[in-house]
Length: 107
Image (cartoon, rainbow, N blue to C red; front, side, top):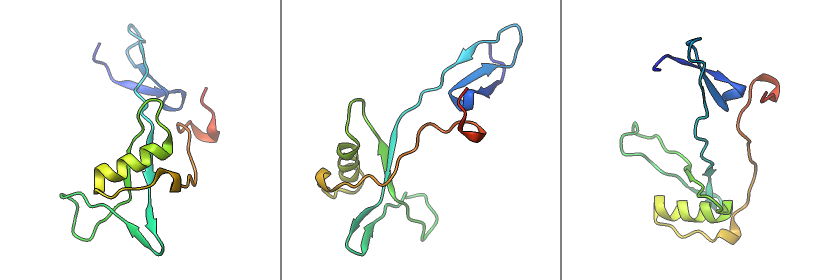
């Protein structure tokens, strides 16, 4: 209907604010990986062309359906930097589920 929506269920849904509509939307949730590539005490960082001088970032990318995180990391490192990474050397340090409301409740 074009009316604004509000966040519901910790972001898993959006609800139309117009009472006559009340439609619920389910935004896309695409899994991603954020990685820090290291070699001893060195790390590989990326830089977006439009970033301010001196600003560097870790690499990141989307995980494809049915793709292992280790495979996604190796693929994204190659795509973004041209550096080949061995997926067997990928170490998963942590993961985070879809962020929910305060207290972790996704009602």
